[in-house]
Image (tube, rainbow, N blue to C red; front, side, top):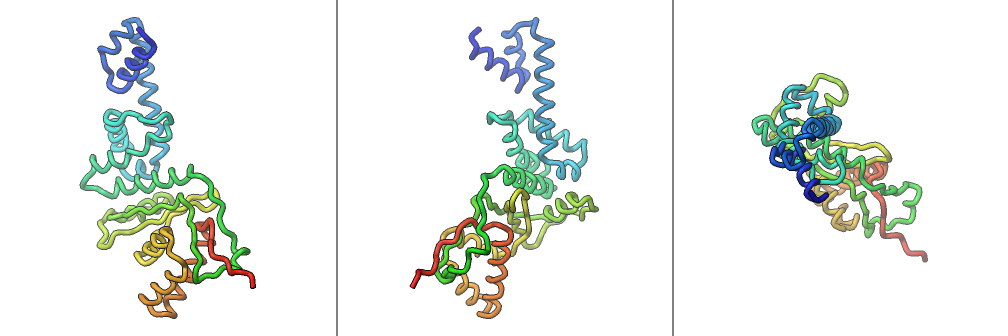
Length: 254
């Protein structure tokens, strides 16, 4: 048997418990193959347990183990790193628990935060260098790791309570879906709910809208005084939360 054929048979045994593959490897290898498969499945279960502790706490040990077994049987690893195996688990939970959508949404929050933790570093802009910015034509560049999650249930409130070791609320659908903003502040992963106005502002700014145009749009929507106050608050939060990595549009020297 060639090395490639042996590797394929080992994969088929580990993933599907393919008895034909085990026979080709050899009957004398049977006990060892059982050990390998047990270790394979145990590592995948441990990977999912470590990636989704709040989800596990929410649905309980039994339901979580059932979901992990189903996932392992249905979705074999497709990446060279075990860290990537968690990525499809929220979809499995959505399939298994279609009538309890908060489960997949809690898992989606955990997955997004885990991905954010390993995202590339992007040094943030400091407030000390803002004196010569021409804000009317300034273009803000946000950290590429910033992400948004659209949530149709109170999954965020449940996740927050579980993270704080508090009693979580009962699950419910939201009349208006939540939008969660995720970003990394130094070594800390952050998440908060934003409204539609800030979401639109962030999406427009990430597409290259100049800051002055944002100010004019929000002033048209809310009135000049309220609009300028809101945009000023956004800017302060974006900078203090280390979401902005560059500002183009400096005043030209006289």
